[in-house]
Figure 1 (cartoon, rainbow, N blue to C red):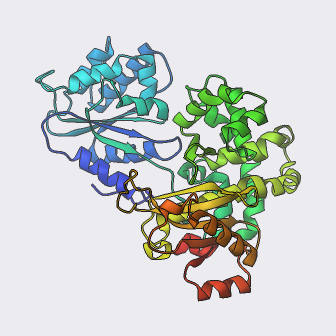
Figure 2: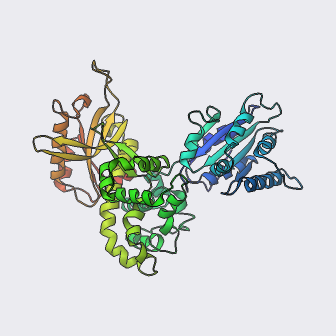
Figure 3: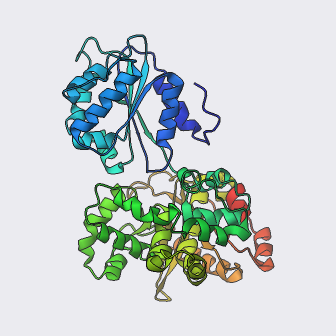
Length: 500
């Protein structure tokens, strides 16, 4: 099954789908495809259906009777029936669907499956019955793919005691493009321009094609103009996308509360206590909204690198961060055409401090986890996180932007061995890094590796490396120090995007 020429990347996803639909068994099989909205799932599955001559039905948010009518019409048209099927129930409809592959395996895609199941809650159980061996002797080798963007629903579809638990031969999550692939997809060669663009729109493919109609920054000098014309422009879809992403999630009942939580995180409040203080609420009041936002994929919870009882919340979609830090506070003014350029000049410092700075730290952690070589790290990366290190003598604590851990050593007598600390790092987007940052990192390393320090048990046989990530570069003195000591690694933007 040849991948369409116009499809960017998605080689792994295409190969897994090809394996699934190409299975030559005589029984019907089930696959589940999920992922956040705008990632190209429908495009991917439509290409699979077309390549195999399969049937694809995209559900809409409607009543049970109307969705059944739409399904019957689409299936009748696919099978060349002179009139639409008129099913009385989904039990009858799925029964008819399961016998359409009489001449061999046939792909069937039910896109936006959560809409169907929301209107007809028994639908997963009906499908489960039809998949069970011996349920109906006449069932044919249908390759049934259920697809959806409601992550909370799709996550429950195959979990616990759900009817379809243990029935799927494919469970595929279509991710956003990572920052390197996003730069390639947007055709941006300048790494600084690529990082700035990614801080606004992330790695969501639809934001370049459908939402921007190919309007991309032509280079670093065009970034500000592009943000004004493509993102802050009330006539463009990206302007309201950050708001709509919440409105599209059925799990979010009190949308105002969830917007407030996201605004608190975008303002730099990463802990539950900090978010609660920002909102004027008790910390215990936020357990539910934080859990729901995490379940729908809008935020992620990251454990502290050195403290087991501490975690940070970060927004998972860059455009949501940009919306809450830049667009939402100036929403009334931005809605008036012609004001965007003036407002951007005013809020650009906020973008650099509240959006670009934290986003650059995220990129540095991603590079350390997935792109840096074992030679660079001094071992294989197993976990990367940010964290705080106590400094008892100075009665303070130090923030570590990047802490990378490798494979654990042999178990110790007092319990399982922890991951080995390979290195720590500091990331600065706007500042030229100098010897002060190196001295600070070396001091933190001493605190971690001292007897009784937070990282003492985690230090392996090699030295803990120091990583300095500079969006604006490094002083000559710092470069000279790194040239003489291989444990000092300087990572600039070209290396972040192209090196290891």
